[in-house]
Amino acid sequence: MVELFNSKLCAVCKGRKLLCGRPTCPILERFSVARTVERKLNKRHLFGSSPPSIFVGEYGYPKVRIGPLVPPIEGNTSYLDNPLKWEDKTIRDILYYRSLLVMGETKADIHVRRSGRILGEVQELAMSVKPVDSEILLKKKPVLKILPSEFAPPVGPKAELLDFELTENPRIPRRTDYVVSDELKAEQAIMRLYNWGFDEYYIIRLLSAGLLGLDKRLVPTRWSITAVQDTIGKNLRREILHYPEINDYEVYFYRFLGNRYAVLLMPESYAFELLEVWLKGSLFGASEPSVIHDYEDFRGRREYVKETAGAYHAARLSVLEALRARRRQARAVVFREVTPEYYAPVGVWQIRLGVKKAMSNLIGRFETLNEALDAIKRRLEHPFEEYLRKSYILGSLARQKTLDEWLGKNLYRVEK
Image (cartoon, rainbow, N blue to C red):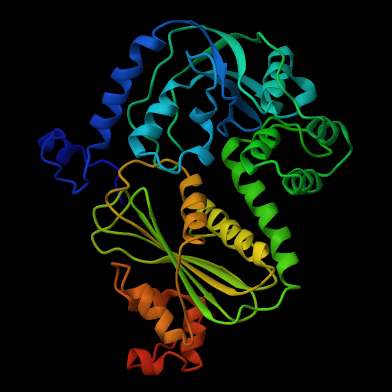
C-alpha cells in the first residue's frame, strides 16, 4: 500500500531535504497557504461573494453534510471555484483559492422536501450563474485542514453553520428555472442544459443541490462529478457512432500540472481506453510503478469503472467532445503519466482540462500505427512495453500481429 506521507521520513526531512523526491513539500506548502489566509478567516461571522459554490459530502449518507462556500471577499470571485479559469494556474494558486472558501456545514436529509430554509438558500445559490453576496454565521472559527485528502480536491476551512443568508438576489437563467421546475429525468435535464451551452460544473452544482430529476435529492459532490461526466459521455458516444471514422493515426500531447497526457486516435470504430501510471516519487507512486487501465467498446461499459475511477469519465468526455466537434469517430487510447511535480491532489478537473488541452495540440498524423506509437513513446517516461502489455486495445492489435514487427516480439494477452 502506498503512503501519501511517511511519518518517519517526514520527521527526518522536515520539508527541507525533500527526501520523498517531490519538488515541494506538500505539508509546508499547505502551512504556507494557511498562514496567508489565516487573518482573513479568523472570525465566526463572514460576509462575502460566493463564486457561487456549494459542497455536499458523502459521509453518513443518506444524512449528509451540506453547506455554502463563501470567501471573505466581495465582487467577482468566480475564479475561486471555476476550473475553466485555472488553465494557467499553479498547484499553489489552486490551494490558495480553495483555502479562501469557507464552508459552513450542516446536516441534511438527501430528500430535499424534508429539509428547511437553509437548504432553500443553498439551492438558490447553486442556481446562480454569477457571484452572490452572502452572509454566514458559524458556531466556531473555521479550521483549515493542513494535510490534503488523498483523493478529494483541496478543501477549505470548515465550521458548523448556524445561519446562512443571501443578501442579494441570485442571477438565475430562465432555462434553469424551466429545467428545475419541469418533470424531467436527471439525464434529460443534464443533456438539455449541456446542449444549451451551460458548462458541466454548473450542471454538477445543480445535481448536487438536489435540483435535477424526478425524485429530487441531494447528491454528494464527488458522485455528481462522475454522474454528470458519465451521462454526457454516454450521450456523446451514441451520437458519434453515426459519424465516419477518421482517416489517419493521430497523436496529441500536453503537459499540465505535473501530468503528461498523450492521446492516440486510430481510424477504426469507436472504443476508448485510459492507461494511467503514477511514476516513482509521485503522490501514489510505488517503488515499481504499474499501469492501471479501464476500457469500453462501442457498447459502453456495463459495470463501474474499476481502476481509474473518475479520471476515466473526465478523460473520455474530453476525447468525445473533440470527436463530436469534428463529426468523426475513432478508437482512442489516452496515456496519463503522473510525475513528482504533481505534489498535491487537486481533483479530476485537471484530468478533464489536461486531456482537453491535449486534444487541441496535435503532434502529427501518421500513415501507420507504428509511427504513431513511436511519437508517443518519445514523450513518455514509463517503459512503453508495459503500456502495451496492459492495454486491451493495443493488446488486441498485438494478437493480430499488427505490432510484432515494431516490437520485434509477440505481445499476446488473453483476458478471461
